[in-house]
Amino acid sequence: MNTKFPAEMVTQHLAIVGRTGSGKTYAAKGLVEQLLAEKRRVCILDPTGVWYGLRSSADGKRAGFPVAVFGGAHADVPIAEHSGAALAKILAEKNLPAIVDLSEMLIGQRHRFVTDFCEALYRFNRAPLHLVIDEADEFSPQNPLPETKRMLHHVDRIVRRGRVRGFRVMLITQRPA
Image (tube, rainbow, N blue to C red; front, top):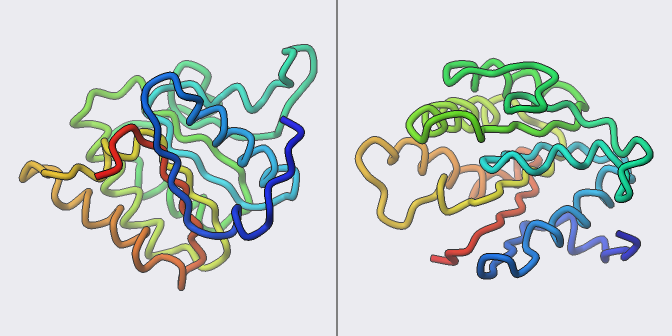
C-alpha cells in the first residue's frame, strides 16, 4: 500500500469498524506497513491467522517485513495457552515486530493466553508499542461471561490507561459496542 497516513493517525488509539468484507484488515495492514517501515514497535494479536502475509511483498515475489510469527500455521515459534505472560515480557523488552497468531487455539485457550499476555504486557512495557487487536470484540466482549471478565479487564486497562506505558492501540472489529 503506497498511501502515507498522517502521523497523528498512527500515533493515537484507533478503531477500524466495518462489516464483514469491508476492508478493515486491508486498511489496518496499510497502517501497520507504514509503522513497520518507520521501524516502530508493533505487535499484532491475530485470531484469524491472516497477518503472516506482512512477511511477503504484495506480489509474493519478494520479502516483506521482518516480523516474527508466534503461533499458528506459519509460526517461527510455537505458543501454547500458558505462554502468554512469557511472550509478553519478551515483546515488552525488545524491539521485535511480532504477530501473535491465535488461530489454532480453541476459544478458551485464546482467552487464557490473551488474559496473561495483556496483564504481563501492561506490567512490563515502557516504550511506545503499537498493539493491533484484530477481531477486538472477541477479547473485549460487550457482555462478558464470568470466565472472560479478567481478560476484558486487562485488555480494557491497556486501551484506557496504557498510553502512559507507551501503548498505541488499534482495534479492528465488526461490533463497535
